[in-house]
Image (cartoon, rainbow, N blue to C red; front, side, top):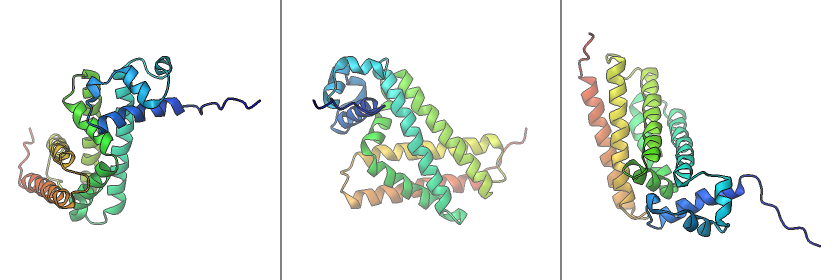
Length: 209
């Protein structure tokens, strides 16, 4: 008798998370997804959902953790590829757009979550963005780009950069994935946004009190 094939550990969890992202990629809002819909898309029975997640919010938070890994990978790539400080902006924006294109459903989930109904998911994403901004501030210190800024002003500059990129994400997700012209325009505009931020930071006089 042929033994029934067992699922690998974590396989059902991954299927459920991927199912949610697939539905988001098809135009559904994460906040509107139900457990039965997600399990149907994943091809598993509804009761199996609760072996891995307490609720859809819990699944969303697990996706946020995965998103954090993607953001950290982006930052590592920027560090590895930037040999000169003046290339940091262009390289970072290029990597961001590349990842957003390759993980479109993931970043659509992020854009939805920032303004979504789930406070837990929203705060999870904002926490990841704060961490991303903190890592950026550390890189700027290492590259000695804005040594004249106080730590508080440097943190605010980094936060402004992250917020600007997140805003550009909504533009990127609003165009077709194969619309190379519009994607290039968004890339150039995002670079200009960040250049203006750093021009302002270069002339900013931090208060020392």
